[in-house]
Length: 299
Image 1 (tube, rainbow, N blue to C red):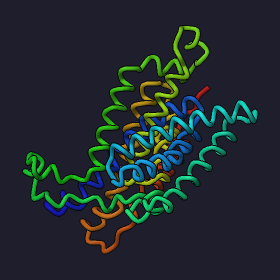
Image 2 (tube, rainbow, N blue to C red; image 1 turned 135 degrees about the horizontal axis):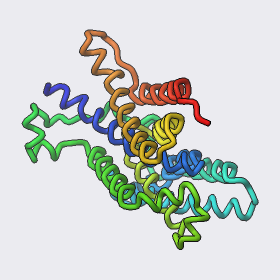
Image 3 (cartoon, one colour; image 1 turned 180 degrees about the vertical axis):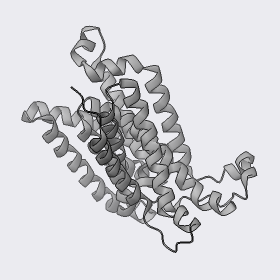
Image 4 (cartoon, helix red, strand yellow; image 1 turned 90 degrees about the horizontal axis):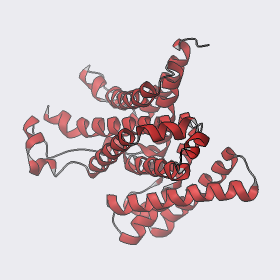
């Protein structure tokens, strides 16, 4: 049990939190038909993360999160500007901006020395979920020991904080978010500032992306933002089921992926393990396929 708490539980919890948060927020992107925006924001936060490291010299959560949020705001503004000035459709403008931001972030990794501090390309793309360990754990009593809890990986604290804020924000602004997603023009007629709500949602997505950055990487963040929400969209037309169901599915995919990657094969006496992020991504794709295959016929 001590070995499980030390080596497997942190990764399991990180994947569950990342999957649940991304699944929750991804539903709003799917309902607004802006799934590519999740891809854009998860890549566009990289220069902000690098800037946070460059200004502080630390891999601390707060500077990186603030830098990522600033980069997300700038990317959102840039997408709108490109659409207006170049008269491009939304997908083209989004793709243009996020590739530019991501490339700038990669250059920043080298220029600032962030890559030498383990903020490297593998971490950016694929995450390092297997490296999340809790060496201070000695048993279940460690869950009540403040000294042991202080040794939890810092990524878990950030993931838990972003997950809590996301759940509270969605619950508190349930009806305005529904209006913005389904009928933005009607929401404007009621006096809602749709652009403000969209910006707030984009900031939550950026926060989720940077929280999951080191744990699961940008590639898996994109998959978790899209796949659980798309799978639920095939299965239901109910707003409540869509939003909370995608969050639950994302959490299950994250947890199951980590378990199948290492702990379950080890428990069965099998001498192999695979990359957890790859398993989670594969399960996400499988979930979309199965939901499409067995989706109820409508209309």
